[in-house]
Image (tube, rainbow, N blue to C red):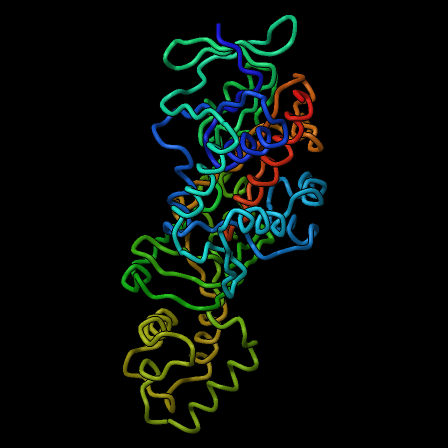
Length: 411
């Protein structure tokens, strides 16, 4: 049986980063990363449409933790140790500068995830980390004298003193099997960051149209988000929907993704302001057809469909729009009700809520409270962030803390 003091199972962002940090902090310590697939850092490669949304320009720990529907409180302490400012500095010290976009998302100035992947691989090799692709962890048992015995997917066995599980989100309970074998409890996995399937045929005809700022809300769930909205061939997507789905992940799963959704298409205007603009149109353009005169910034095709959905005939002119018609139309603009009939995972994020129960982990070291020498990082934990670089930041933070802690135990 070969002997490796530190083994990291999972070659994603958290595991890869932890291995680098551990090897650098404890020179001479043998650190290896096991990756079941043929490619390390696969999620890093595809994230952000191939640009890699490395982190988010949010530098206050409490504000930052508020972007995690699950795990925010647990991350408060870790963010005092390693937060986005530290992520930026770490990559820049290795020649990779990041840029901040208007919405706070941060990307490499190269606009290519390959820049991040190459930086991480180059640093891992320079610090002597052993990288084993096509080599997953199949079984693990605790040794009587401490440490772990590992069985790999190719049948080989290894021993290690410290083990980190960073195998990614538990999209199925089986993904957390190794943690359960070592005594841990999994919070049930359910999808987070997903798009909504909408039953209304008129909405499907508008696929491809986007609205820069809309407000979506869930009656009965006390959830509300504002942001960009994208109409798809199946329903609705965009940042506002993805954030809403993240905060409501468990509740929406419980109702089998069948629920009413309300959309305010003009959230920057109140009811009175919209009513005033409608009256102004009636006075200034009485002969114009209502369907042909949209209020900015609504796209013309969307405006037309909202007019018709409010029960206003296509040939109606502003002068002929009745009081009841005006009322119905204003309600349609500020509270369109749509029936959600299903969901699709956001393929750029692959985020699932659920995972190793947070109370079973000491977040000062990312070490198990139940199994000494076992560490966790990334989405295997019951932590998930909103879209915008927050999930990667949680990976860098938990990886940094776990790496330093494993080095301290082996040094």
